[in-house]
Length: 251
Image 1 (cartoon, rainbow, N blue to C red):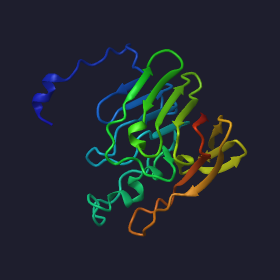
Image 2: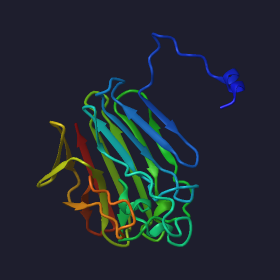
Image 3: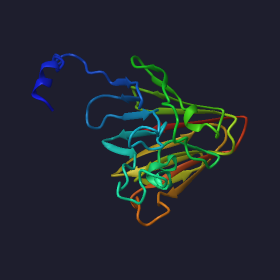
Image 4: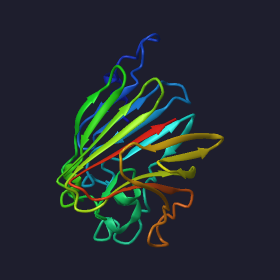
């Protein structure tokens, strides 16, 4: 960082000035963040749009993370080893950590996201009041898999609860919703209880249809990161003209 950059630093906020609990960032990799407050145990949620076509990009369009009770519950698995064979070439999208199958987003009809998708934007957002909201148009990432895909989120600033609402129009096959966690997973009918460090949160299927399962996060080859601490919480919804996947995350 050049010392000259100090000349353009913004003024420091006043000590009694409230720090916003929500923010939205547009551009190629659009992101929205919400939090209940600024203490270490306050709930935090972040979600992105974007495109896999960005430099070093993953098929993570629509992916999110979630923290509560001072614990990260829903994780991004992170980068893969850049030295894997043909990592930036023809094998790129065969590696598990780069696919949407390893991110907290959707898989439709067993297909990968469009690797050349135009950036998926924030359609709307509400960054003040309660609830906080954001909507992303993910359609460009699912060309060939569905006619239209929209992911919306509401965040309750009092409780830290989140509602994720996916609307998928004319999917070519089943719709699979995933969230990756390193917590203990217990499926109870329409609910999934995650437990870790003496704390717990609950994922609840609000939509009328869908079946919860849990799978390992193991990649297809031994050279890849084996993700041994992680598993995927999976909600599978059958194909229909309009599929609504609604999941509540309750801290």
